[in-house]
Image (cartoon, rainbow, N blue to C red; front, side, top):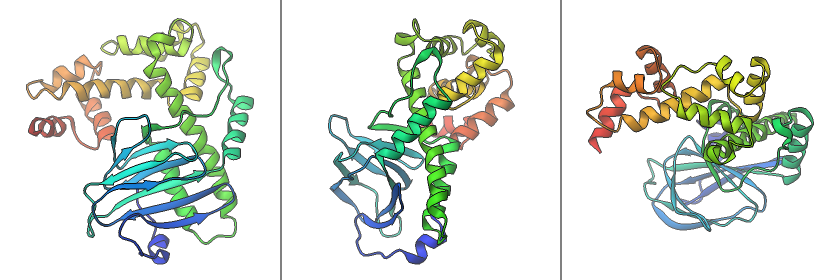
Length: 302
């Protein structure tokens, strides 16, 4: 993710630690923080729910009731209003600053989107959408990445209608985050929920049969749903298609298997359920920005 030219033209670098450039609109405020030197135990707090997303460099986050964790580019974090963050910047330096986006979103906006979702894309099995889990740390998928990049442009653009543009993008962002959060809940608790929830049952089934051929036809029969309805419900609730979810789980398994430097890549892709090495290579590289062979070699060096 890159910052637009308009940001660099107008920002003032006044502090070496967490220099803040802010843009405020009706339902959200966007803040870009830059740190140009190593620092520890820097405190930060917002009075609204906030989406933090790393742009460049590394932070170590210390949150109440959570173990410390690395916060890296391509990752985001949802925090509630008034949550106190304590942050370390182990690698920041003048020529290689740490940059992070923080977007404070009005609670009314979030609640309105949740209401719209329940009216228009209700969950299966009679459940309702609710506010996302806070302190939710996740990797941006392609959809969320593109929205954040677009929001960076819109907030920094000098356009009379940008409040309207941003409001529409915020709605999509909130929907996608809720779906991502829902996906995490299902994947973390699939076994526990599988007796009472069809999607949780399917997710558990996928995980237990990754090495086998898995089709939408097979999964929809297991869920006792038509193929079209199964596909629609799956994508509405989890934010990705069944095939993309299966590939994501298979690549997670591949990443684990490739930690073994003696494991042959042919055996890895077959154990993960891929029938073609070229397709496996393509999916792996798209998700990890590195080929399976290069990933295995890199893992062996650590």
